[in-house]
Image (cartoon, rainbow, N blue to C red; front, side):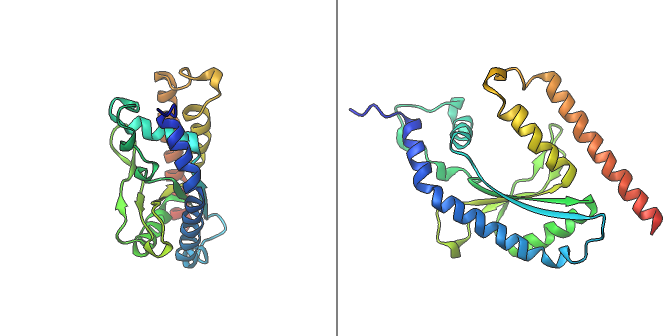
Length: 209
């Protein structure tokens, strides 16, 4: 009888898939850069559009898969039920856009490039959409791995990068302490403040034109 756990099997699967995951991330980043090139050329000196790809780390993938499993844990009696291929975000691209008025333009351009991809927008706790998000396959790449892309207001996206490291993947000594009701309230306050800043900036730009 094997002593390997479900986590051991999933780690092995991850490293078997890693070349494919990287290929999807590179392909997706390249396609998105090309699809947004015409928009890049029209940006003014105060506007920005940044494309950033990432490959989901092994332990993060395992954590995500266990979180969406029944009971938020792996059932040792059903090892065949679990595969990292069920995750839609092993390879991902985030498109950071400033100011926010450019977001719809970028979203439309990418939807034309990936028309069959499934939409699953990022929402806040009240259900309001914060950023468009899509996932799907690129059949021409010949891979089993799905890709995901997000189009995010730049200030919000940069904050999420900091918040993700501090709250979602904290220092082990802070485990269970960082994700508190108070920190969630402060996160909402920051997100609201960043949105107000972008609204104020766009109002100034409109008044000057």
